[in-house]
Length: 419
Image: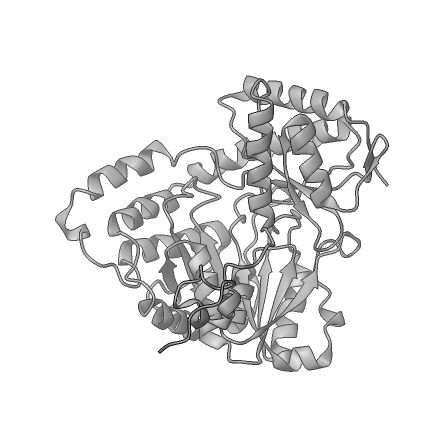
C-alpha cells in the first residue's frame, strides 16, 4: 500500500514534488512573499473600497493610454480579412522586416539587411526571454542593470546561469559601473543587457558610454543586448541607436518595440536587429518557441513604421505631460528633473511625512495610496526612489492640468520631507 499523505501536505496535488527547481520545486506556490506590483494592486483596491468618493490618481501604469493610430487600425481591418494572412508567420513576414529596415535607416541612419539582420518577435518581452537560451549554460553570467526589466535575468536563472546586478546610481549618471565588475564575474559573463533611454531612471546613453560598452564587450568577449523600447521618447537631443556606433553590430543586437513609440502596446510586436549570427541564433530558438505573430498585425505595424508622424505625435504628448509632472512634484518638495527619455519620472522618495518616518520607497508608495489615493511604483534596488508614469488617463490638456492640480493638493496635505 502506498504511503498516505501527511496532514501538512494533504492539500498538495500529486505532482507537487515534480515542479522544476527554477520556479521553486516542491515549495512552488507555498511562499508568502508578494511581488511589489501585486502589492500595489491590492493597495489600490483597498483605497478604492475605503474611499469610493476619491478618484485614484494613477501614475503607476506603465503602458500607453492611447490606441494605435487610426491609419494603423485601418490597415489591420483590411489585412484581417485576407485569406493569405490566415497562416503561421514563423520568423516574420518580409513586409514587416523591410519596414523595420527602412525605419532604422530613416530614423538612425543604420543600414540593415532585412533578411539576415532583423527578426520579428511577439513583443520585446519574449525576445528577452529567448536570448538567454542562445548563450547561457549552467554557471554562465548575465550582467543586468538595476533597477530595470528583469525578464532576461529570470530566464538566465532558468538555464542555470547567474545574474550579476549593476546598480544604476545617480552619482554615476545612472550608468552602470563597468570598471567595478569583479574579474571572476567578467570571466564567466556571456551577456550584458542594457536599456537606453533607461526605464525607470530616464537616463539617455552618450556616445562615450556606448563606446566604452563596445570596448568592454571586445575585451571580455561579452555579447551586448540593448533594450530600445523607449528610444523614440528621447527628450534630450535626437533619438540615438546603439547600432549607430562603429563596432556595435560586431558585439550585439538592439531590441525594438512597437509599444511605447507607436501606441501598440497590446499588439505584441517588436524586432531584434544587429549581428546576423546572433539574429540567426535568436530566430532558431524562436522557431522552436512560437510560430510568429498574426500576419495582419505585422502588416499594420509595417504601416506604422513607415509613418514618421506617429512617433512624433506621441513624443510631443508625453514630453508635455512629463514637464507638467515635474512641476507638480517639485511644488510639493520633490527634486524632480526632466528625464532624458522615457515616459517615466524617477525621483528620490521622501524620508518622512510629518512625524511618520519611512524606511524605504515601498513604504512611501503604500502610504501615498492609502492616505491620498496617489499611485506610483517604488524602486529600492539602488536607493529609495519612486517612479511616476505620464501614461495616466486624461482625454485632453485641460484634464491633464486638473489632474496635476489635484495631485499637488493631495500630496501637499501630507507634509512630505526629503533628505
